[in-house]
Length: 366
Image 1 (cartoon, rainbow, N blue to C red):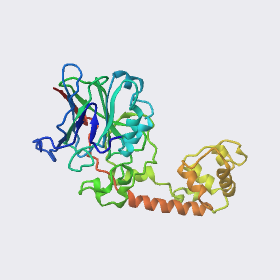
Image 2: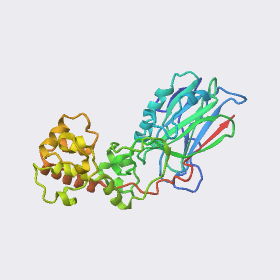
Image 3: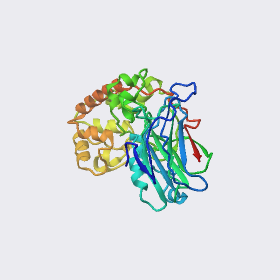
């Protein structure tokens, strides 16, 4: 991967110098990035082509981009994504961590691929392509290069991306591309669950003052299939996230109000929060979970320690395995909820609108 954005592409060289300075658009940044040393090869009746990507969003940036020219068969036979199906690991990496090199490795050297690259040269030491900005780069149209594929992550989302797949390369071609959600991560929109770091947030954002914003915790499971992105949600200042992320406190349930460690407190708690596995809850694993004798706490903890039915991916099970008894379990829940409450600063809901295209790709050939 040529992560620096400088090197050779096809038979000619290219660089990321300024292309005409500023672009008069009357918006926030008006930045125009790109090189002017274009490829001298050719496909069809032109000698070279360039692609110009414009970020059409408001304050939603684009990550480094995967750029490929290839025959149409390449992405027909091995598509970057299919709506309604699970995301590939390479696209998930782009959407959750803003890293495009895995997609480059997925396609480079395959039959029908003219060139597969990572482009991250946005000039002025910019890490991302900001809303309203555009960047141009040459595309290798020789040989197999009659179709253009570009993919970029949305670093201020949990698992957003946009993908132009096998767009036909010809002079004057324009493509408007909508955002997708790869379904790899839950859309909790916290400062600590997106690829963007603390320094990447605008100064007016709450996340710019949140030390947790340098984390990228992607353990909250997503929808597990690729779909149209629903945009940024107004999560009501974090109240909705509390319902989603926080554990139910032990004293939230009347049946546990006077429960003492050693009786069936843990089984009762797990039943109240939605577990209905009789093997987990019931003595002798007999009867329906709604009408059986619950295991006492010692039996319950011994079962989850020795059972292969559950693993530590389940947060409740993991928490119980790390607890000495029911009281310790409840204390751990209280501590975790307190930490979560302090961390529930969320991304602004106006970062982008799912109802409109997020990217424009224009091709000019000369």
